[in-house]
Image 1 (cartoon, rainbow, N blue to C red):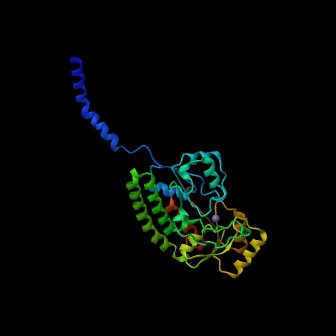
Image 2 (spheres, protein in one colour):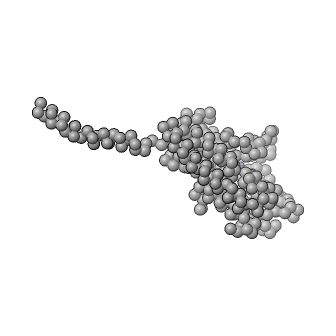
Image 3 (tube, protein in one colour):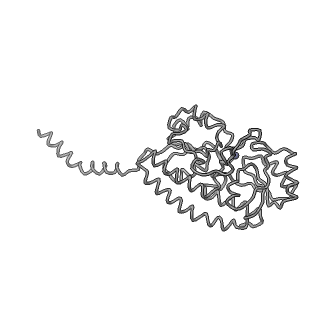
Length: 312
Ligand SMILES: [Zn+2]
């Protein structure tokens, strides 16, 4: 009896402290966070904007060809643990993602599940093909999947992605929405500044590698008058380079453009022969000095302005 009452008194003394601990546990940030598998670094970057506490893994770097990826065991393991996979879609990953999905055997990220998010499904892609003839090379039939350089489309993708995260993790729905609002207000403030800086590029013609920068040129009012690839996915041949060289004699071309994972030799040869500036533009966050999508846009515009002789 005596002992019991001591225990009771002891507990009643500790009660305020226990209550405090309980409240602190309720308020503490949840330790569980979304595990996200991004196919390309631009989507890893977008996920970080919308869900800074998520654990994000990017299957490729900006210096890797996103069309050609090995379904390595480390990628399979990451995909097996993912709550959400975020990929460009429009067949960009057709050569490797289905294999990863199959081997990872994670029902959350199967096609058609809310955990499998394709950016291209949220927007209208450019250059959709009505009829595809595979003899034309590795054609993107569902339109161009390299949408990271379309600011309007990326804003639409961000909005859809924040909503999807809220569906998968409803306890944090408000924070995804708040992060989206913060991202969009920065993004929408940056876009007109980029457009003003890039104004002199409007109407300029370039020769580039693949359709990698199609959305950038479309946005800035530039035209790609030649492709270093004779067919999509095919490296430049000497006959093709010779025909491009002739092209530069007819058209007023500002520069030859390519990106890090593409073979620079053909681009170099053409630029040298045609006495044109050669520009290597970053393709995604993670390249030197490119920490996020804002840096990416800054740098591609800087690179083009430098080639034009309008160095910032
Ligand atoms: Zn492509």
